[in-house]
Image (cartoon, rainbow, N blue to C red; front, side, top):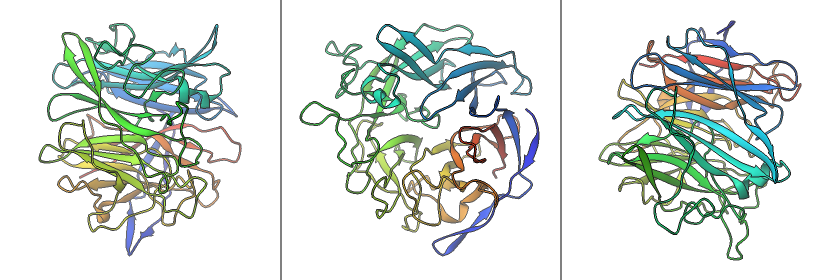
Amino acid sequence: MQTAERVSRRHFVLGATACAAIPADLPREVFLRSPGKGTAVMAMAYYTRKSGGEMISIEERWSRSDTIDVAFLRRSSDYGKTWSAPVERKTGERVANGMLRRHLRGGWVDPRNGRLVDVWVEGILPTDDPLEGSRQWNVYYTISENGGRTNSGVRQVIHRGVEFDAKHPLPHVWTGKNSVMLGDRTCQPILGHDGAILVPAVIAPLGPDGKLSNPGGGYTYHDAAILLGRWRGRDLEWEMSEVLKADPSRATRGLDEPTLARLTRGRLLMVLRGSNDRKPELPSYRWVSMSSDGGRRWTTPQPWTYTDGTPFFSPSACSQLLHHSNGKLYWLGNITPENPRGNRPRYPFVIGEVDQDSGLLIRNSVRIVDDKGPQENPLLTLSNFYAREDRGSKAVALHMTRLFALPDGWEGDAFLYQIPVG
């Protein structure tokens, strides 16, 4: 941890209600600093055991969109107060038929048996164009019994049944034609009501001609699905839920970056990223779906609203649902006072409470965590984050890079915010 700063925020109006700012003395600390111009650092830290202070941090260095140049892992045994020396984790390797790229997504601890499940995405990109991932990405994982110090070895997520293999890992997915991938770091696994491990994922769909389909005409297009894992001995057996599809006339890039939470009465909530990319006249919303059967079937996605039924604007960006030990369910992401255009603006960044009966956002709970300062670049990106409950302070610990704060392009330090919650 390095220099502490104070967050500058403002109030803004959501419909007829002002959105309050978290107290202005909320500090943010530089968690990991950028090594120099042209490089942005994105980072996260997660616990590796059911209790205690053992953690792993992932540092990723970026010099272009959707590509991690290199990653470094560090370990802590004291709740992140001190860290070991960094160890490189390769995220790009030249191979015979292209560039092998990896996107790390961190780990999740099963609260029942303490096993750490690490998940990530990788694929071979023939010309190292990130868009080639739409045909090449697959999901991989390891299992550790000792907090990540050793693991089971690399395994691919493959649907149970003899008809599935590495080239056809899931229903509707054939490597080389299309792909399955995890969203951003916010798309964390959860434990379902029935004991399954639920991993939110997205699929690049195929059309009737067997080629990638983009019915919305946006930059990319995805459907959503849930990967359900169940323990069989010391490994996981996988199956996939039904596929959730958007109305492409309302969400031009489909459904992306799902985040999950448990609700009351055995139900599950999924909040998804939408977009009005290339059709800015469309309202840009979050989309929501629910399941009552453990995550296998889902309701038709609808615009997410406040508990009073009012929709709100949100850009095409990741978000996260987070259960807290205080019994509350929080949502973190971007809400804008005016309709966004595609990905922008990705500020202000807010936190709000979700009603666990309706699955809707409680309007008067929404608070601004960070926002663009008066002299900062309008391209500022407050996104690509990861949130967790701090086991010591019980605050919501938010890892987020303030990307494009300066007009120099790919540059930005990784910050750690401590958000007080009641």
